[in-house]
Amino acid sequence: MSEWQHGYEVIFMAPESRRHHGKPVIDAVAEHAKTLGIERMTRRTASEGTGADGRTHSAHFFELADRPIELLFVLDKTLTERLIDAVDQAGIDVFVLRREVNYAQLGGSR
Image (cartoon, rainbow, N blue to C red; front, side, top):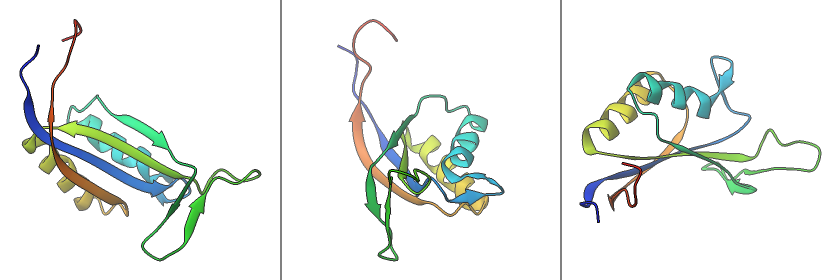
């Protein structure tokens, strides 16, 4: 088994309709990650979420643009800080969650 590493799970969350300089916020975050050399990420689409303002964001039958989108990373401490700082410095309006995790790559693809 691989050795366990300590790091952070970082999840950025925003409605699909939210924009930063004309592009979806989550895409802007992903671009910042790539400029830092971060290639491994997971994008998840939720059916519904409620924002800090109490407004519900959801995927409707005729309109999918308001559905919540999450971009998830598992990173070491240095990359976590660099990514969060880069997104903050860019002024991207996005909610972020950071929590400590232990992780390892299992099997043959190392």
